[in-house]
Image (cartoon, rainbow, N blue to C red; front, side, top):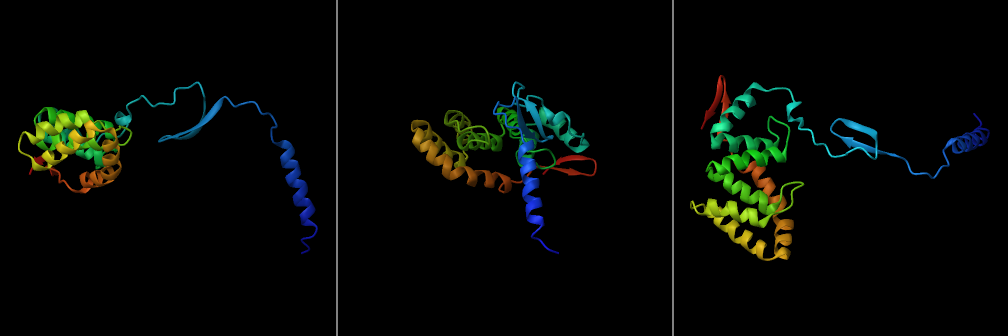
Length: 200
């Protein structure tokens, strides 16, 4: 086949397409938004923040429903639930819910939760920036109970609180290390067996 004749046809087709494109330079009133439901064009005036709690949209899991019930009254179960939300283990990963349940556990006196909260606030958690003052509060509670790791982190939190530059350097260096540690360094204390959740 002679491709010499296809070249002018191709050029004419491109020219026709170019003429069909809008030449208006007026700004569009829509913006493309992508979220967990997909991508779509939405009006610029529409609120783009998703203020709806979608955790209720997820199909109910009887095992986690029971763990949530336990977590309402047992700080150890609340810690486990927070850790599962942080890791996305069996539930949709949700750092906000992780903090809610960790705080409930920490306020209930769970040492691991107090230490975790101190670390989360010191390193920052996803969209939440670092908060050395809040970290110091939780780490003081944990260190007061004799936890050596919390004492070491408390010294760093105090230093970070004194110096914003030190906080930035600490955050940049330790955030990925700390998150990796919480993803794999701590074991769950509650385990599902045939008929319910059991403490190990």
